[in-house]
Amino acid sequence: MSKVEVIDGVAYKYQIWDTAGQEKYHSLAPMYYRGAAAAIVVYDITNQLSFEKTQRWIEELQRHGPENIVLVIAGNKADLEDKRVVSKEKAKEFADSINGIFLETSAKTGQSVGDAFKGICARLKPLADDDDDDDEADVGGTGGQKKNGCC
Image (cartoon, rainbow, N blue to C red; front, side, top):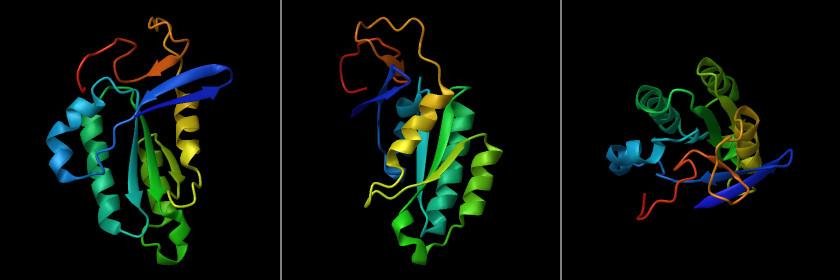
């Protein structure tokens, strides 16, 4: 999936892959984050185990991902505050410890979903040599190079 976000007159083009945190995709993960400029790692605020898995995914990204990757920790299901298990403070502390962006979202209501992309744009500079003639700054992925196939 692709997404274009325009911030301060600059169009940022995202290539988005969603593994849903499933272990069956773990071995494919390097293919997803190779060359990535940013990663959004989502956990369920009503599920402690999902938060713990988020921490493991971040460790993986830090070990094998690009050096200056922008990391976003997103707590999903903010609309289920009454069922919260993972505190905002704990998640924010974790995000701060990795110099990441923290936010809480609700896929159900749409709360703060776009804020993750805006936060990433604020930390990234447009690629100066973006040469794919589409008037957009590419964020991660192929760096403007056209690729054939799925990846």
